[in-house]
Image (tube, rainbow, N blue to C red; front, side, top):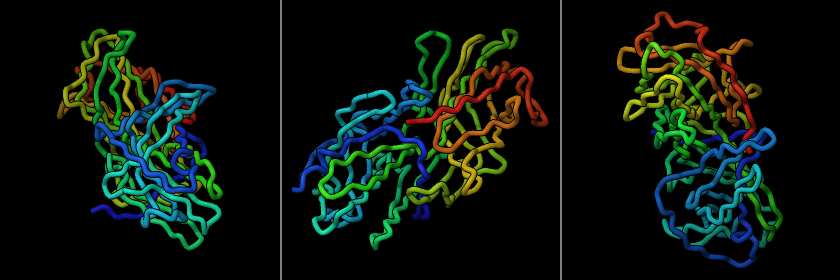
Length: 356
């Protein structure tokens, strides 16, 4: 059973923006009604990088969970909202929101005339759509301490695998629900409220190449990432505005299983994304000491530390990193024991970009 308590990090980098002016800008109660469409979250990395930052794109019918401890209504001081009117704008994906009025949410958040400043806290994905976020709690006795619980799953199956437009390989498209994001803001009474979301999790995008013509197609049944020191997945809790998290059921290995094994021909690539969360200490929020394992079947795989010429790769929390040019041989030479520290055929360099 999941322990309910806390998560959020000090979000040094802002992500996609949601304009809430239609909801909070009117002193009278505004009621909305909206449907969610598919019961899936679909936020995604855009691939568009501007000034070293990559935009996170909202998708129509994504849902967010907004909490305002000072609000007059509802009694729970929270409501669910649906994202719409999405406009990509540089490094921001701007959107408006409408109240999701089912599930007992007949009223949206309403200004409290007895209060001046109102504190807003928001979480994506909304638990109505995906249980990656499953809990929240707050203290409204002047401290405005807000916390939530969420899950980085140990198994992250792609939602689909598509051929690249350039014909050079495939992309395993990740589940956007694993891109957990939060936002927090303080506004005076009757202001227009804008929430700027930033990712809590670390994303690492790998591109691997079948670079050995003598070994035929590279066929993968799964890919695994693991750490000997950091908890990189599992149920966790944390406070908004902090850089620490407490794992309730920590996991040190994440697997990307393919329902149908992916076969990559010589010279072609496979791109996939892994979402992780790991904090070594309150002052060091990097994930290091990572190994990657490529599995072809139940008995055959290759595993190695992720290293560059400068040492172990380091993946900063809350950002997206890229690892490209990893050359993987065919199945015939994949059984290696003991685990090597590095493989000379791999050209492994990581480029970290901020996400906004």
